[in-house]
Image 1: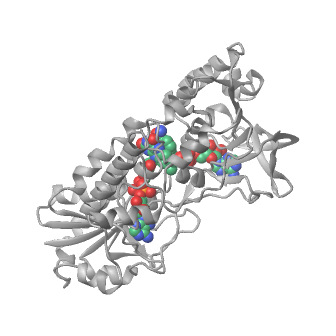
Image 2: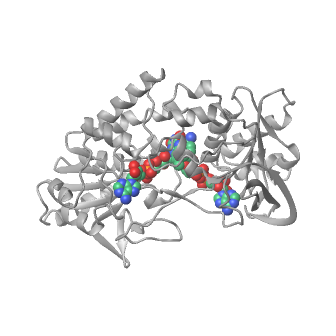
Image 3: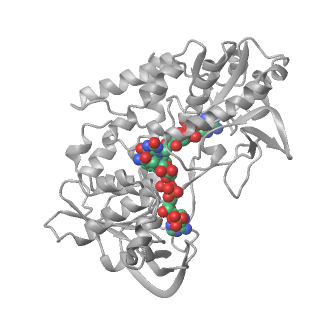
Length: 449
Ligand SMILES: Cc1cc2nc3c(=O)[nH]c(=O)nc-3n(C[C@H](O)[C@H](O)[C@H](O)COP(=O)(O)OP(=O)(O)OC[C@H]3O[C@@H](n4cnc5c(N)ncnc54)[C@H](O)[C@@H]3O)c2cc1C
Ligand SMILES: NC(=O)c1ccc[n+]([C@@H]2O[C@H](COP(=O)([O-])OP(=O)(O)OC[C@H]3O[C@@H](n4cnc5c(N)ncnc54)[C@H](OP(=O)(O)O)[C@@H]3O)[C@@H](O)[C@H]2O)c1
């Protein structure tokens, strides 16, 4: 048996494990995760109201229940209480790092760290019940919010800010976040991009969904659309890739729509680059933007004209970022681990038995399905190396070594107990499944199993 450790149980970790056991009957896989819960961002990122995408957890579950795959939760690699990278490599013939991109990119502008200015990562972790999330009182006293960025995460957090509690109650959102959203006084969300509508990164299905939210109107200023050369010239619009063309159609319809009597408004803004988060008494009071103009090469330049948008909450949704793992090489510019076809590269040379897949390999873009071919490429490299790797002496079972390092993994049965506890909590609250939102509750439930 070739013993492989996959670090991370998100989509890339699960697809790596699946590809390994499907393609080689002599491979046994341990999937390690620092959390007691599997599925990575499918559990802790995909928005709670996207139940169909959330249900992909069922597909990932079949991988982790395969008889040659074992889930070991609560096992961090690296860090003060984790198993060191070097030691892990001694316990397995090969290790595949699928650790995702856990933090956020920074804007690097004054006021970014004022109270009331948070990354989308922090906000998403809170409403997703990530046990490391902190309740920052995100919505307290907020009427107007600015969301910076025009990606799908920006669309998610914008939608969560205006979704009615009636629509969120059937989801697995933690009770604290549901209560805070129910009490929210947010009436205006300004979703702001530094480039034009045809350079936005969101996809049409996600964009269109904003227009169908009850009691909410999407406002687009036709004068701002006209700043995009593609809108001024109809033949330029039809020459765009399908997603951009369809996005443009949706935005043009919204720009032409008459105003409605609604409780909440999403104002979609373009060609505004954030230059300062404004504060008053140490709290966010708004954002100062500079008007930009297309530079003719897909980018923008500043125009020296400025605009201020009042807000009590700023969510910076400008992309995620990989974090370095002690003992692994790291490309600080890209926020990824350097690799060649999935083989980790140390000092310019592929390191035997060490691999990467997913966001830590490619950077923080791509949907769940993108991780499948990415994982396959890595597995192809690993299996090509397998004959050389198999000669390494490794323990029959690495569990005693993990325990000797002070780590008591949460087994699959422990995760199933967490699932039962979340169903019980939902029943007690008169809801469906409700997620446990802190370490003590998760580990307590896991131990009971
Ligand atoms: C907010 C948000 C919403 C999204 N919504 C959608 C969507 O609706 N549809 C869609 O198709 N895609 C969506 N995506 C994209 C999708 O989630 C990613 O493509 C995918 O999750 C990346 O997979 P991954 O396995 O590389 O990373 P992750 O899913 O982040 O998994 C990484 C795993 O590694 C574990 N880990 C990290 N460090 C360590 C360590 N040191 N030791 C042990 N374990 C560790 C983490 O706990 C985690 O479980 C969304 C992304 C975000 C950020
Ligand atoms: N429903 C879904 O399918 C779903 C949901 C959520 C996430 N995802 C996927 O997850 C991945 C990550 O999504 P994401 O939204 O985090 O990233 P993203 O798609 O890369 O979008 C990041 C946004 O931030 C902007 N930005 C970056 N730096 C900036 C700066 N300094 N100032 C102002 N704006 C800045 C970008 O603008 P520029 O273009 O100008 O750089 C872009 O609009 C994507 O592939 C996404 O599709 C999918």
